[in-house]
Amino acid sequence: MVCSITAVIGRDDGTTARERAIPEATVARLPVYLRALLEAAEQQTTTLSSDVLAARTGVNAAQVRKDLSHLGSYGTRGVGYDVEFLVRQISRQLGLNQDRRVAIVGVGNLGQALARYHGFPARGFRIVAAFDADPGKVGMPIGDTVVRPAAELVEVVTQEKVGIAIVTTPPGVAQDVVDQLVVAGVTCILNFAPVLVRVPEGVFLRKVDLAIELQILSYYEQRASSGEVGLDALPA
Amino acid sequence: MVCSITAVIGRDDGTTARERAIPEATVARLPVYLRALLEAAEQQTTTLSSDVLAARTGVNAAQVRKDLSHLGSYGTRGVGYDVEFLVRQISRQLGLNQDRRVAIVGVGNLGQALARYHGFPARGFRIVAAFDADPGKVGMPIGDTVVRPAAELVEVVTQEKVGIAIVTTPPGVAQDVVDQLVVAGVTCILNFAPVLVRVPEGVFLRKVDLAIELQILSYYEQRASSGEVGLDALPA
DNA sequence: GCATGTGAATAGATTCACAGCG
DNA sequence: CGCTGTGAATCTATTCACATGC
Image (cartoon, rainbow over all chains, first blue to last red; front, side, top):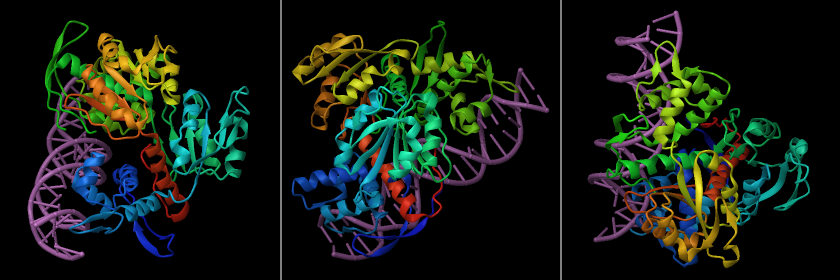
């Protein structure tokens, strides 16, 4: 779980830098900062202090500074952070300066909704492959491509050099699908199937489980309605 | 952020118990245990040890025991946990023994996909109200109800005694919608809109941000492909 | 003997508080 | 003087290790 990787990474501008791994919690907040910075840029704001950025992201100001310090010393004391510069740095860290090739496996309600989500192409995530076990769905247009039969998964994913896969299959087949994705060279997976899936070392997996989210809310609703004790608000 | 609530809560069986607030991280795992327990029950397994439960949920065995100990001493030393009994206890803690009345605001791609998700009614989450600003969507059937105009939100949500709301609107209107939901008495909100929303104390908010999930994956994909340094696997 | 329940140890993340620089 | 960058303090969560009890 500890990543003390040190890697030498080439930058756009030709320079290189020794980069340390960034804590997972920080990585998860970088997109949040990025969004706020892009909004600020749209409004011609050139500079933001950690206080303002904190207010706009719901994060503590010290946290903002500590997070950003992981990218390097990119702020100016007495002034703040240069919006454009920081946008570039965060984008580079997140690998958003190059297009990411994404596959969707399972083109049901959720898979289709995700495929149609405009936020993805807008941020450089290109859906270059889609699969479904249902022959009735094969051929259906999705993103830049059409749905293909599940049997072709390994072949197409390998060919298309997919790096990121979104799994929206029924739970029963999710592990099998994930195993095939790994064989096909996928290193990052976002799993929506409500089941535990395992991946080998070196493959990064995140999961989003909607039923679990609602059950968590249910706990707090019960507290709120039956307890009626001052329940403190929780992180935004 | 600290919840040291102590509340006296009436149970189904008529008993009462002084119950302490459960750590948030534990609450988030209870549905995971519940799922594994229900699967075990289906296969007529009557008893599970923390080791087995750990293996089936991807959680450390000590963690399982500590989590379950927050519910009370429901295990038997030398034996394990009674599956059916534990299912009941967790369900009760999560408030799953009573139906939860849910509203969906924003019936776009994602809202529709969620509304059609079978996992919700199966777990007692009843969609009793749905709203959209688009007049073309008004009247469309969703769950047990039909889509109503956004203008009726406060009225209908109040009337229907909605406790949980799912927000799948565009980001621009999400804060406004959330404010109205709070006015209408909603205490728990699941926000899919890609924007920071604020809620007053006493209202519980969770967020799911798909664009952010992908950007996080992008970071790790970049690491995996450009660094090629042994990146340790991360929590399943 | 075997698996729970839990104090102690560890790890990780957040917040505080302030030195240091522009 | 204001705001960053960061060590120290704190809080939360996880894991270890073992006494406890069926």
